[in-house]
Amino acid sequence: MVVIGAGAGIGLETARQVRAGGGQVILVGRNPERLEQAARDLEPIGTATFDATDTDRLQRFFQDLSAPVDHVMVTAGGPFYMPLANMDLAAARRAFDERLALTLGTALYSRDKVRAGGTLLFVGGTGGRRPGVGMAVMSAATAALPALVANLALEMAPVRVNLIAAGFVDTPLSASLLGDQLEARRAELRARLPIRRVVGPADVAALAVHIMCNDALTGATYDIDGGQQLLPH
Ligand SMILES: NC(=O)c1ccc[n+]([C@@H]2O[C@H](COP(=O)([O-])OP(=O)(O)OC[C@H]3O[C@@H](n4cnc5c(N)ncnc54)[C@H](OP(=O)(O)O)[C@@H]3O)[C@@H](O)[C@H]2O)c1
Image (cartoon, rainbow, N blue to C red; front, side):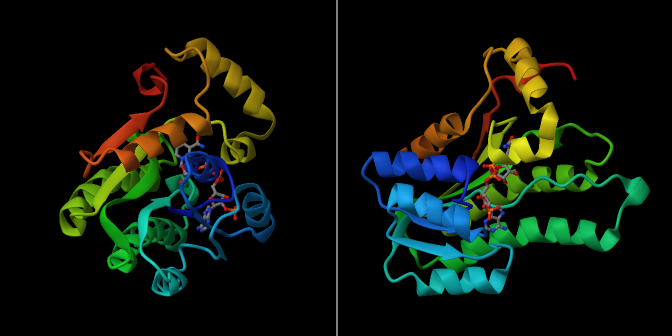
């Protein structure tokens, strides 16, 4: 499996579970120290350090793969909050374009590299489904992803293409976004979520492994949020 966004969080945990199950991994991330640490733990058959939104670099990465792979998982890319009141239009366009290009680019450049029955697996979120101040661009990207994935599933067949839509997941990304509010957010979720606990990267990784292994699944979006969307705001 290739994991694009393997230095931390959901991607790193999925790579860990795949290794524990006897699979081989190739790890991609931006931050060399984080990637080296991951490589020490997981002994991948390859690593590559680059920003996956650089589509030329993404194309070269797939071109340079010396053998076909079974699965490509993309957890790269973060959320973007841009209130209209201080929106930079160029930055807004760039954020939307990068999400689109990362998804389409992964499909386009991996076409001859993924074995039949293997998967492309993208990770997005559920948070952008609810309108809010600063959410316009992220909501648009959130709405676009299931449509992209469904169409790509037809065009990539017999390779399968799926999307995981996560609610709050307790990862380094969440920690960096919330700062000193992290503990309060965890406590709030533990009290309010129907599952009465916080969703962690291992939960999402277990879903990812299932989607990769279950060859009946393609073209679909799988929510994992502990029931967060069911709650009033
Ligand atoms: N955590 C949540 O609550 C949550 C909720 C909904 C959706 N998601 C989505 O799930 C995905 C994974 O989130 P996470 O919480 O696991 O994030 P994370 O803890 O920040 O881990 C993401 C990893 O991906 C790498 N990465 C990010 N952008 C990249 C890029 N452009 N090119 C190459 N590598 C890149 C990061 O690399 P570096 O180490 O180089 O920084 C990091 O190692 C993201 O798309 C996020 O938006 C997360």
